[in-house]
Length: 333
Image (tube, rainbow, N blue to C red; front, side):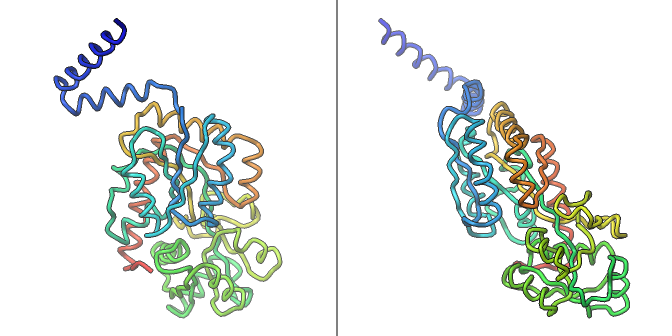
């Protein structure tokens, strides 16, 4: 008798699906999925960068705490390549049920200005939460006769295109930071690209290149030892790692805010209820004292956000970097 009832139930459900049409049936399925407890099985977090990098390190820092909060395993899936586009495209094609998430960085909003993407960086994703950010620091070699941003700008204006700035390659955060400085202030400085930020910092320390925008972890020890001079932090507030260094706005160059931020997305059409649960999990993790201590020791600022705030941030960053890339005629490295 029970089997007969079950057969009738599924037969009725099939007829209802046909009568409703595929879109309405899919909508009902989505609502049914969001009504279920979440999560009930392992969650995959795609990290579109190689193991050992900053994004991977962040994911591994958060992983144990997220497992504790979610009550399910969190599997990290490193998919490097294509300036994060390979892993991002994989996330776009995943089932939108909350069991595939994507960790992105600023690169997600720079790529649209540099290349043709196999996905829409806004429409094909559902924002979950910002996580942390790391502002760039404007540093110079001690031999540079400028102790403030205003003095550096005056030096650059007096001798256009003779002051060089290093970066980890075309389209990298340090490169676009220098281009934004040029755009905002009107100074003419010359870009010197390196294969990565490591060799660029080495040449900066040797005095072979006079200035660079770079994350605090790479240069904080050299600033404290006097081997480099920090002129400003490119953020709206001072760095917790270098609180004595003024912001670019405080130093006389408002509008130059650059660095790297990290956020979590889901595939588009992931049910809102599941997005809210994932957002809540991230928020709880970012409030844990041990996680906050570890993150702050890594030189990042703890951010967090609502899904709506992250969505607005992504659109704003795409517009911002698209303008810089067009006006500076930046090409992929």
